[in-house]
Amino acid sequence: MKKAHWEKNLVELIRRTSTDLPADVEQAIRKGLRREKKGSHAHDFLSMMLENAAMARRDSVPLCQDTGTLTFRFTVPSGFDTNGLVSLTRNAVSRATRLGYLRQNTIDSVSGEPYVTNVAHASPMMEFLQGARKTVDARLIMKGGGCENVGQQYSLPETTLGANRDMEGVRRCILDAVWKAQGRGCAPGVIGVCIGGDRAKGYAYAKEQFLRKLGERSDVKVLARLEERLMRDIRRMEIGPMGLGGKTTALDVKMGALSRLPASFFVSISYMCWAFRRRGVLLGPEGGVHRWLY
Ligand code: SF4
Image 1 (cartoon, rainbow, N blue to C red):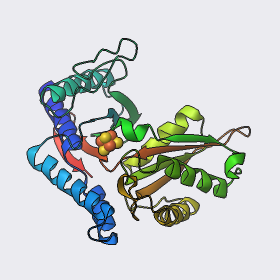
Image 2: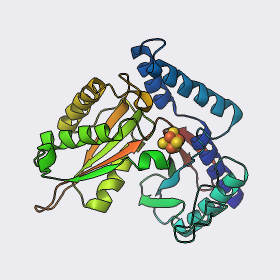
Image 3: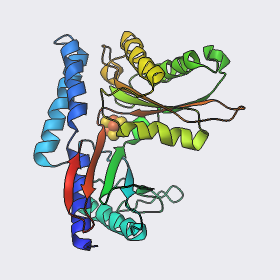
Image 4: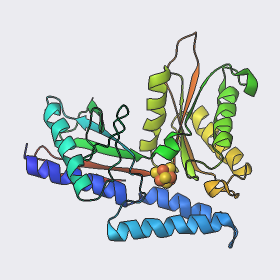
């Protein structure tokens, strides 16, 4: 393992994620812009978001001052030294903070003191999977606090919504979550959903949906149809960018399902803001870049 290569390319992964809005997200915002009336709040906000994105990309500065919770997802070959990768990743986060790609954004919850390098227990978060490839697939999601705050979890049946333990019940929960957010969490955003699982895995799997490209539908037919229908339903709510009216309330809905126990039926909903920061890279055994993803 060539430490210098690994660290340099992990820093570059952080820089790209923090400063360069992915093409699929930008395309979805442009699509929303075409739908809104010129001179409307919705049109102005979406134009501003695109201008911000262009400026952040040009100047290599964070897309938003809240550089968010960093979650790395590594898929590594069999026998790979994951302990080494943990320490390289923590070093890369510290360096990216010094270079200004990340803001000092991590606080000790008990003392209220900041962690100046953004490195702390479980910060950044890291998940490891084992894959068949010889390369390491490294993906990073940065999720801000504003959009994290408007996530919701429902336990069906939910009588106040008339939501039973079926797909119609799931649909009602998702619409309720979007309605409650009312543009908070910096709409338009992407709605990640997990049907089933337990409470912890439900939220984690809802967030995992953000690794999918916008515009791509679930390969489970029922969910793909529901994703489409929800996009139409959400558009009709007219909440709009930042909650100030318009058709572009969500850029996409991404649904996944896990098995559940007979006694519980959770619907977990994670909301990602328009500053949808997600990037990935395939790295060789010495830490060299094979290919950038997204
Ligand atoms: S919700 Fe997103 S765009 Fe809004 S402040 Fe937080 S990170 Fe920034």
